[in-house]
Image (tube, rainbow, N blue to C red):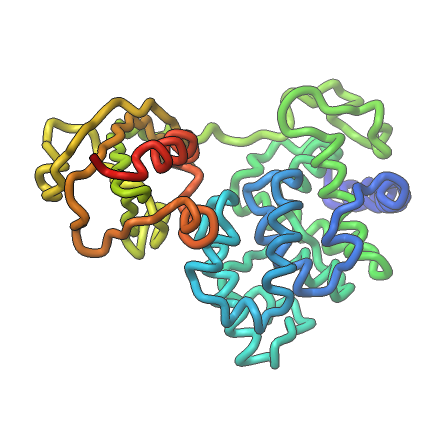
Length: 358
């Protein structure tokens, strides 16, 4: 299909998509009040995270940090605690870097300019397009995975949607058809359709789709074939040992390195599984020790298989940079990544059980 034919098909889809969105859009907190800051924060949170999981975090975040100024000034540990559970913590760090730039360069308000928004830390083409169109009404596309899937199926496009040149081509095509009077609604309609109807996994709900009579994948029964996306590389598996070290109603935490996976967050001490006696290396004598179960966590490129040991320590001294944390600090102060969530019940149980060292 030539470019002119593609444009013609998408132009016919615009009205249908806008009407469908007006009648079927989910009510979400960042849609009922789409100020630039709220749109920006929501879009960063929604990267690689499901909508249902984001709503509670978004509302809590907005209550604690209602302005770019507040975000720019919050201590990092408090920011990480607000973000705890969302994962991909560099999103939060970049959000704060960008907020500081917004305060310094733009008086605390996001600029109504696509290129200026795109230049902020942590903001890519999609996020800049979403903010510019939804918050400021600028006619620029917002091309994410949902949009790529919808467009590839409507047009019957067999190009790999993981390739940057495919994304660029879709963006250029949408630039020609995006309605100048409702760019934000059009972008959200495409995203919404991909999220709730033109599904990424399982069978798309074509009977609910407003553009099914225009959709090549539906008409040609190719929805299982499209979109095309190259297989991801197999994740590396790491076998790790985790030590849950307790004394006097507290558990030991250490901060991860400032760069790399889970950078700068607090964790239960852990190492790649080997035969080393790590407690001895750390100079932590054990009054008692017992198996504390297993856990698994999947990151983008690596998968952790963890075996935990609960240790009742015989001394207060910890290696440099480690801290003792009680239940209140775990709840309110220190951000422990979801990678260790499977050990949370064990930690809370033993914090009470071993509140006094024998």
